[in-house]
Image (cartoon, rainbow, N blue to C red; front, side, top):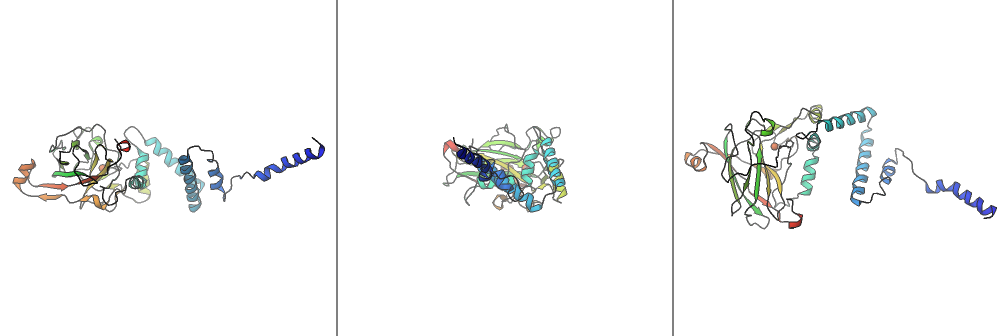
Length: 315
Ligand code: BEZ
Ligand code: FE
């Protein structure tokens, strides 16, 4: 190698950093610099999600000109949210719920196209080992509250009834509590049960009309609601999870028309199509027929499920 060519190499080596131009962190270029750090991510979906997350997070920080004290508060809040989580309490899901994130993910992944029964949040009070009950049975294991007959029919999106569908229901009591919130007060498995529809897709069961209730607000999420002058309440509703082989499972509620908080649900779960009148029937003969005291309330909730490829069906 002659002197000239080695000079050239040295010059090239010196020039190299300027030519490669590694971009360092700056306020203006923060998104590009951090996004570039994900360039080698082999999973393209993860790369896309992380780059978008950084883009929006940095945009948010710049938009509100976040102070160091505010960021420290946010970190404390998220730390306490994590510390509040246990086997029976999921404060992060609650946070997702009050920010409308749960409903947005639920809604965009379960489009109803005006045909299917709309979905809504599952909430924290579902149990996997709910008791199987016969059609017509009561799920109310104590007697407080307005007696109510709930009935409906499960159809596929082709309009045909689905025999053998499973209808899992759970609800709060007439004071707005779920059994799992009052283990020493309510009977075990109160106000929950799994029904199998008949050959014509029909289901019916007896219960009481639930009351509206507050979501758990004794943790960081409650603190956030109070700091932003929001109430913690959910309008009265009965939860349903309806499934059948070859159909997309729907997790939804039926809301009691006229209940408080229908227009300000703390978790944004209300959809117009899910609100039903719980009409009063004052007729001793009908009450006797359905095994309820007179007068009683009644609601009908028909459900339409989407056919899916068996291999992609949930459950
Ligand atoms: C519920 O309806 O059970 C519920 C939903 C979201 C948060 C808390 C409770
Ligand atoms: Fe609920």
